[in-house]
Length: 505
Image (cartoon, rainbow, N blue to C red; front, side, top):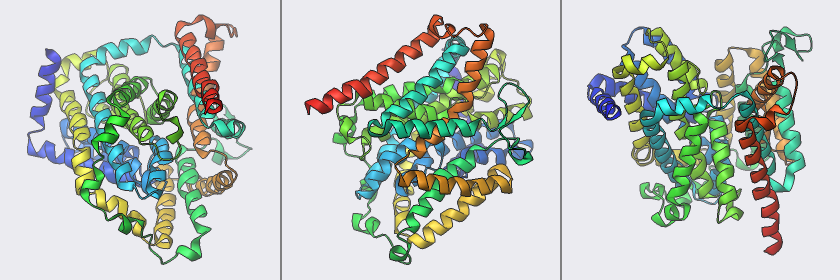
């Protein structure tokens, strides 16, 4: 009963036109920042942080929540239209969405992404409000060995998903893990692999790799056909005869995906969001891999699978609700965006912990309500109002479009780090990713290896140090044993069973 009363109070606060205006402004800002490579929702809320000194806590939290949800979805816009994810969490959407875009079905792909985001975001927000205390207790059951096994599970699945290039997947993933070791040691304040230069002491920021691997490499690939395309618009958007109703997927496609896929992916995303540091990238990938392994149409994956889009987008938006749990209960951000939101709380004198829910529920409820409403309006606002403009991105002459993307991407990499060196790294990684893509090495595997590498090392070393170097701890811890068994199940489902299917067909 208390949960429903708190929820009702949260919606009531949004009836104040000033609070509502902040929510709408946050939604539009999040959509813009999320869609532009390099300008993520993390940066948007970071820029909002100084403003929170001059506004009340409720508008600040409401605006942060709407930026978070809108930014998580809008990364799929450029991921679908021009194969450049606006955020790392949209990598899996780019794989399937851009294939549909090349088939002249970009509006349909954006529609499925929006519906998946709406369902996943709504489920995540509802679960946040209903089960946050219980979810916090469950997350405490996963100890350090279990967290290592979870990260290992994610990396193994990353490698084996591309069954035709497992060796190249191993190389790309290990390259990402190796790049993540540059800088300060994860457990000791000692620099390593910095080659004697101070510029690498802090390590490599994620934004140069994201921008280089996707934006810069895509620009270089498009430059191969520069003379043929410069000054010539891509007419696919015109040939499609864009209509707003094209953004609404037919019910037959939604039924083919199945409500179970949406709900299952949303629960996966929420559960992963509860784990500190997991983030939208892991949520999207685990959900995508799970959907692929259990799909009735696995042959469609990698060729424009609507089910793959639905699974990835449902998970990464549901993660938004889960990521608030450890931040509010323990002061441990679930992802980089909630780390900035934690700063908004602290600035306004709110200390995370169980008592925060008991004593300040009236301040948190509007933020929860904003998260839910932002998810619910994704379809009508983004598709019917802005949808046609999203698809028309490809109608811009490629010379102008990709030149602008290169400039925005490099500026974004500088703004994200305020380092000219990190900006130059974006160029270097762009060239590296270009070579990798030309030789069929997965840049997605490299990026996810970079993201998950520090956690893999940290949890491995901590587990061994706490158990006198005995590796049997990973087989004696129930949580670790569960994720290791899950890894074996996925290897069997994707490789062995998939190979048997191929032989039978």
